[in-house]
Length: 488
Image 1 (cartoon, rainbow, N blue to C red):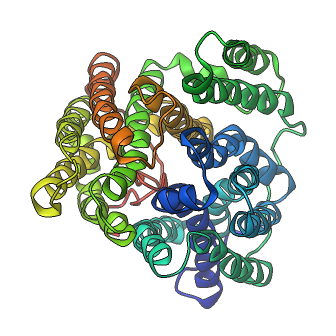
Image 2 (cartoon, rainbow, N blue to C red; image 1 turned 180 degrees about the horizontal axis):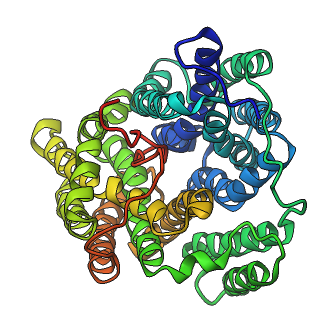
């Protein structure tokens, strides 16, 4: 393992450039597509279920395979799998941009998620493996800070592309950027692997996990159009539950599980991930439906809708490190309880955004309160997830927390329109969307309150210190934001 690169040298900067741009492609694409949904829905004549699958096709394959992607990189080479993921992502993006109908677009989005699952774990693992110990935290801090900037620029860029060109360019712009990442990675990124990684891969676990998530997602998405008693709905929901149950059994018996169930013996780890599920399910609904509501109901342009959340990202960048430091002093329970409650209050403000909404009067106050709540929540949440298990499981803990967050967003997008009563309506029809949006925000506020209760009951008042370079991550992009050393 060649762990001797220095950040101040050109070789180290090239590695940082490749990993930042590569991971940025996958993280931005998870959110920026929301801005394009009204335009692509109108052009491709896509109904509510098709738009849901345009989002969920990507998230489903990404959430199902991200743990396996990390294992592949450890075994076969992190650069190799990272480059393969970027190239796969580029080809799938090209297919998305050229899709003649919504069915092709959904299939291409599923393929995009596979590429994202291959490249996402590798970007951070490469930095941890190739940089000298004294520069590792600095490299991760630079990677995460630049990732936060990319997360802020992404919605703005997506809104601008949709407004001045076409929704197709939200996908097509990935292709030249991915080519650049591949060229830089092949030339400048050293190959590393974990010689102690298990020789076997948990393919059966990945398969039944994907079946479980896919069955639940399909069943809940199809429910409004077919009805809860339809055989296809009942069958896929049963298949989804059976798949998740089988996943637990497979992981329990596997000699090389991608998810060692022993990590859940920690009460703090279990409670933190349950809180993560509640908070990120609410986030998944908010960031999808708010962008839609601003354009379809309130009449905002794609560019205005894409930049509406920028103050939230700025607050996360400024306040997350301070929130993490505060949680270290007073313990994670209080901020992980108060933060979701503040977020819940923000979502009640979001529910008020309607046809005559003003950005300064109606949108900005809600965004600022949500930014305050998320800033208080995600730093101690991530630190507790990493710090509540043995250090040898730190990578597993990070991967599980990431997968839980993505699975929560996946199921939220599938369930919320059904729970809010859209029936067979359209997510691009203002008459149908407005009440659905309002009820969804109330449901999401309830999810935030549930996360606060779980944190209060299950998260310890004091956390033990953990020797981990990553303390917080960005709520929008699911990427680390700040190194442990607050001076960096």
